[in-house]
Length: 204
Image 1 (cartoon, rainbow, N blue to C red):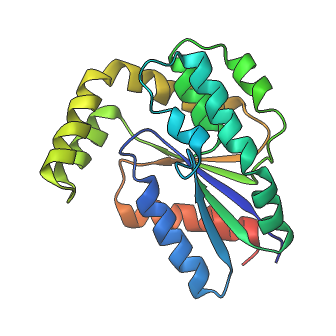
Image 2 (image 1 turned 135 degrees about the vertical axis):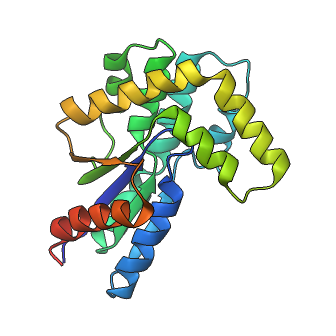
């Protein structure tokens, strides 16, 4: 089986982490070697800088791009050894989030033009209102839940712009195969849709 690079994208609360875990477990049950990565990679000093509130969107964009650049050799090595690499966010998060802040999309693409292109991008699309309901129903501790809900409420309009940017990327980006999953459906339905897309790509 040929190594594949799979990226999951979506707004906060869309369920990416849950679907990544379920897909990873299912692939490993098939005897397939899977490595999970995530961006931002907060183990690096560069990624930790993105948390500084005083930084402007252009600087944040460059930091995210640099964080990704640091990981390119590792991604290449993993693919060369035949692993399936599943990433929680990639350059498309930079494109969607920072263009929603007003940064030019073409410039964002230019600064990340040399990254390894994924074979599949799975976009979990979900209305902002539903992501808030899911956070409310989640099992995370109350303080964290209140903090996330407060941020989502403040940034509702911004999150809508991000969602719109993602859907445009899914329509027009030709670097990878995009699969838009309707995240408002039940978990089992979503997971089967993801499995069908991935298993076909992997030839299993």
